[in-house]
Amino acid sequence: MAQTFTTTTPTTAARLQAIVAELGEQFYERGAVVRALMASVLAGQHSLLLGPPGTAKSALARELTGRFTGARYWEILLSKFTDPKRMFGPIDVAALTQGRYTQLFDGRATTCDIAFIDEIFKCSAGALNETLAYLNERIYHPENGGAPIACPLLAAITASNELGNSEETSALYDRLLVRLEVGYLTDPSNFAALVRSAVIAPIQPAATTVDLAELRQAVAVAVPAIGVPDTIVDAICQLRAQLRRAELIASDRRWKAAVRLLQASAYLGGRAEVDGADLEVLTAALWDSPTERPTVERAVLTLVSPDAKEALDLADAIEELEAQLDSRAGQSRDALSTWAIKEANGKLGKAGKRLAEMLRDAQAAGRSTATLEQVSARRRAVHARIMVEALGVDASMVQARI
Image (cartoon, rainbow, N blue to C red; front, side):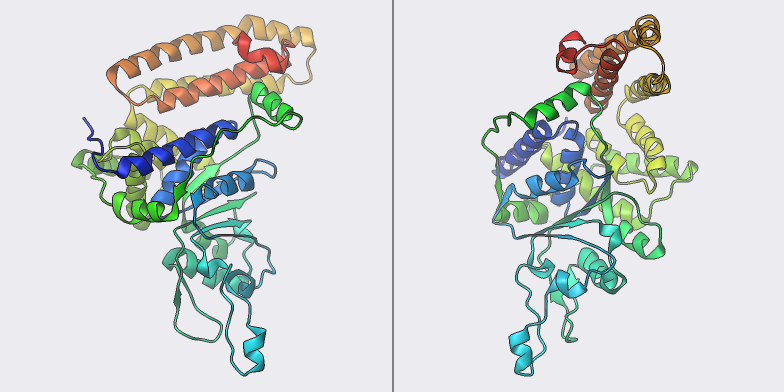
């Protein structure tokens, strides 16, 4: 059985858990994304939010980083023409008039604890090398050729609407250990709640925060102290071999960095050593192309839980039903209703019952239920779509019907 903390550390870990829970409630269908982002920060690693415009990438990053009181925050929207001095510090004009060539660093990347870099793959050629050194080594080479400046950066959250497609951006991409796809809301009831929030703002509970000193203590001391038992090392070796057979190759550097991510996940869960459930966070660290993500997820989750294979098979069946719904978009309401009643509802109902059974069994055995909960949430979202689009149920009422 995994050990739990007995020092004052759980106070920080518990508040970080509370932040994850609060943001998971605030941002619909983003619970797993929020937890992975928090684990990335605790691991001292950088992350990428990848998705189309209007998916709350910036809002989520700002809300999360805003929970770290006392942390110096910096953000920028990059373009192909962004001057590196705009990122790291403009020239001190007053000093220049006196013959001294220096930069002003306050309020720039060079002095921040937490950064948010939007449109990361649009980094200009002139800023690329300094950005790479900043992210990888936490240093900046000043314009006057002086000694490199050590930057206090703990972690950067980055965002992009699309992946870069050049050798230059691939170097940036490699620095981003945690990669998370975010899309538009899929559950009609969540979308209805989003629309309603534009008219009636939901009551927000008191926001949990963590002081910068506590966060740094967690990153520098508590997380690295988390134990990694031999069983986890063996599981990582097995996972690497399985992915290599599928021709999915991650660098040795990425695998090593991923271990700290596992430790961060365990710390966030209040455990003194990594256990099998923490391996789930690797689903965000071991793919390059989004087309590779399902293969990585299946390999990782099957390794984590004996329930995963059946759960993922059910997930595939659920995705197929959603694809069928999309393909019938031009059909009449009668045709859609007939399909929903005779085929889709029955399959989704059976999937729901089986997932509920598996959840009860996993809980009774003390196994991780994260995968089962994610698949169950996906089933509810697809079922809700079918109820709204094929059967005409009001979106605001659909949750009560499923």
